[in-house]
Length: 230
Ligand code: FES
Image (cartoon, rainbow, N blue to C red):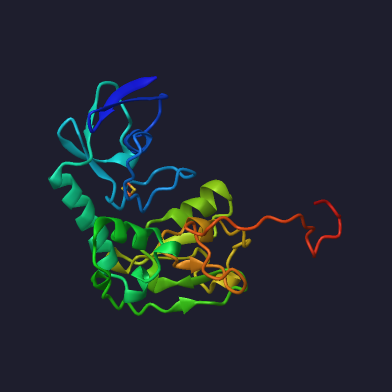
């Protein structure tokens, strides 16, 4: 076990935990827009910054080591987190912050007091609605890469990639054409992990993302298989 302090609170964690795990163990939540506990950490969005022994580090990719003193509440580092989230939001259109129930980004902005009119961008990248089960709104993509890692590392499909450079970086099918012509198997992993609602499920349940309220569960049998297992 590793023992350290977060905001003056002693924390004990198993080996291999991150500072984000340590902070969350104290009940403090941090924005972590490129992080999903199911995925290897990327450390690319910088929304989870904390101070560790005086150094500013991304909590999601920094190992929790013994005797570290972590500070999340210092004004300087709070402002850095707020600026990182606001910068991401500022590149998106206003609808990006309209619904915090379906968007981790919108929820982070609300929690940090970032005004809704911060999202005033107009990337005009368009939508890909070619696939019957997965729709992409490129204007809401923040290039966090969660969908790409979910598709490759968890699902093992490798259907998605990030294309473009700088502010124009956006998720796209690795085959280069429309989503419908990609290797996507419609597992829904990308929909589930997307922190902004850029990737959604059309039709019934439209807009479901990782922020969705728990769905009703029913016993059912696949309509296309016929084996009959439930
Ligand atoms: Fe830590 Fe993105 S969540 S850098």
